[in-house]
Image (cartoon, rainbow, N blue to C red; front, top):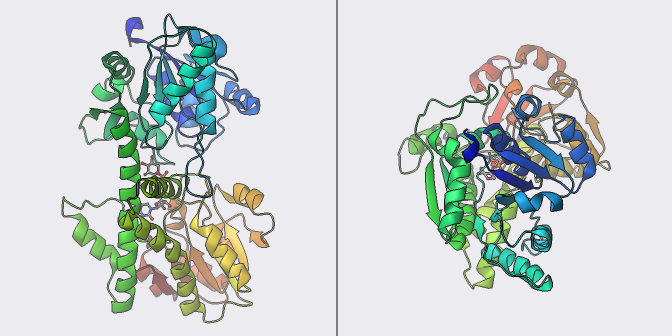
Amino acid sequence: MKDAEKLNIIIVGTGYVGLTTGMALGYLGHRVICVDKDTAIVDKLERGISTIYEPGLEELLRDGRETVTFCGDMLEHLPEADIVIIAVGTPSKSNGDTDLSYVEGVASEIGQAMDPESPPVIVNKSTVPIGTARRVETVIKEELVKRGVSCCFSVASNPEFLREGSALHDTFYPDRIVVGTEDVQALNLLRQMYAPILEQTFTPPQAVPRPETGSLPALVTTSPTSAELIKYTANAFLAMKISFINEFASIADKVGADIVEVAKGIGLDKRIGPGFLKAGPGWGGSCFPKDVRSILFTGSQYNCDMQLVQAALEVNRKQRKKVIEKVQQSLKVIRGSTIGVLGLAFKPNTDDIRESPAIDVIRELLDMGARVKAYDPVARDKYRQNFPEQNIIYCDSAAEAAQESDALLLLTDWDEFRHLPWPEFGDNMKSKIIIDTRNMLDSNELRSSGFTYSGIGR
Ligand code: UDX
């Protein structure tokens, strides 16, 4: 990237969105300052140690950091910043509303220290409720008034669509980039920032190869409000799509159909598409649950009752119970049984356990008097830290979790579970029962190894 096109970018928040985005923009040649209040995180990142588990991030921290620095305070860097990206946490409140205190805290700091002669473009990347771009603008203006200065600046909405476990891939090769602003100059600056991605002119990082699809990302330009709503609509639709197939998995179970084949049969219709039609134990993570509750809260504020989104949430809650029913159908008596759980993370390729199905399922199995042995390639320690009170036997391998177990319960579709030595596993189990809640295993292979196999909807 030519010098003229390089921008000075501050990105506040080094979670899986902020750090991923910061490292990707740095790799593209921009001068990026990643800011985090937690100096322990800053210190680790400065030493090239990744504070989150994201495929490809370690490599970028090691090799792609020429123009990236980390610090605990952005104030001294604000004056020369072209763009300030807000990527801090926006946790759920108990009533489903979104806690904007971190976002507003950053907005205040910007208002206190930005140079009114050369204001940066402020960008909301965190998932924020409708109207937050305007809220951030108001907070900054209030700080400027306190300083006795005023200036024209703009706050744009630029929501992320990153999946945990493929956040760098989704950053470098997005389907689309959404920019919500009424300010042409701000739009041009963001277009410049994303130009290498929009044109796919950059050399792919070794750890994040370019997919063959070949189509260039689209740039969607709209108002800040529409951009904010795009984010919620996308996540609510994806969550609903998963709950939809999970609902049909219940019927498939009853009538003896195979939901994997049903999903294939509908997904080939281009109007439906094959993605996000994998039946399972229900969705988890830090986004779908939070965003669905947040948009339902917003709907309630505008007297829109959003029944379909509400139903998606209800189906998802019940899906955990369906997993317990599956275990009961297979094991008959849960009390006093030993159940080997494969997978604790809410999805593969991440150590994130937030709202993972494993949390509700394991809690219920323990309450029903089962002995639980659990293995996860990456998320075990985080799980143990979060649930010290749960009396779980943590294992170092899938084989250990299977040893002497009455049943194996696969909850997370980690690749390493796909082709385990099933005959050997079966020989070491008390009974050869496997419940594959991700429908990821070859049921014929399991059955020919003497297992009683059940999936979700197959
Ligand atoms: C999601 C959105 O995909 C992403 O665009 C947004 O920016 C953040 O939220 P993420 O939560 O990281 O990303 O994971 P995702 O891969 O979307 O999976 C969400 C949940 O749905 C996981 O629990 C996953 O196991 C489940 N899932 C996903 C299914 O049960 N079936 C599917 O077919 C796909």
